[in-house]
Image (cartoon, rainbow, N blue to C red; front, top):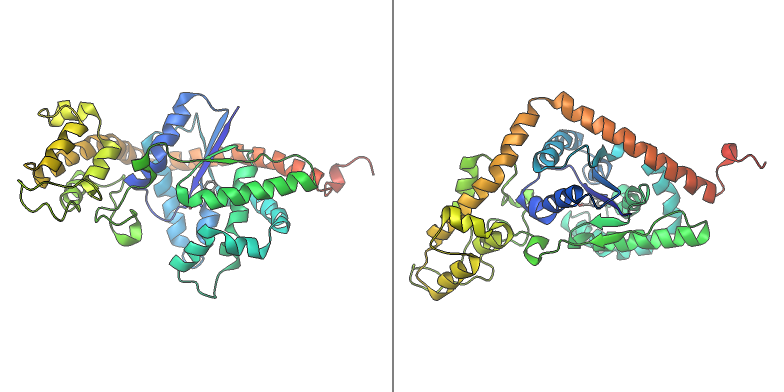
Length: 350
Ligand code: TRP
């Protein structure tokens, strides 16, 4: 049976881009009962690879991300939620995997390459950052996860993980499981653009709707959204391509929302047809999107506020999840060390 694992760097609160791109899916997978185990974790050690000088940021966001997870429906009874840095076995595995990867292979990893560019490291790349694909392989293989739901940008990480696994299994013994990346199933869900129409919703661009946003924030943000710059008058025909409001509707809107908030139309196709024909103003479409976002986010925000009242309970969940995860990682590490013949004190055949 399948073992699923996904992680997030705790560098900021989660937003609806995360929700659409991965959280919603994780909750569905968790509730389907089809998987042997589901691990969801905070990659705080990975977050420190490019935030070494900002430990407070990582620390603070452990709580924020935990609240976001739980508020979205990740259930600690069904999924194991853990904190990466608290599992030393992951460092040990990384150290051994380092021997199976060349510097040039890491340099060719497209995600590493583009992240180095984005972060402006130039020639001052922290070694820890440079090698994070190896540590990510440890995260995945420690739990023998075969299914790793990720965004497109993570595909090179998974490819690299598969190479490490193949090389380990071939040199030592078939201990590790080759993971497979699973991309979001629906095209719009691949990546939600920012409110301003930028390719990506990201904290640094200030174009996000956060899961914790107040009802008023959501309304203001939806009103400010980028639409079709050619749609100046209500009568003008509108365009759907790169029209952020419609991209969000594609991601969130269900037929029931029309019955509840905009009964003049039966479904999104009818609304789109009217918009492209002309005669439908952006204001009305945004008002509809706002109703949907309010309806979707209200229960999440309310659960989040409730959970935030008892952080002791949140830390208890994290501690229990981490203990459970560590036991599994320790078992894998034992197998890895035996395969590598570094199990001296466990080997009775001296
Ligand atoms: N690199 C991932 C990201 O930035 C986070 C991550 C760390 C991860 N370890 C992982 C994702 C293992 C999947 C599996 O989103």
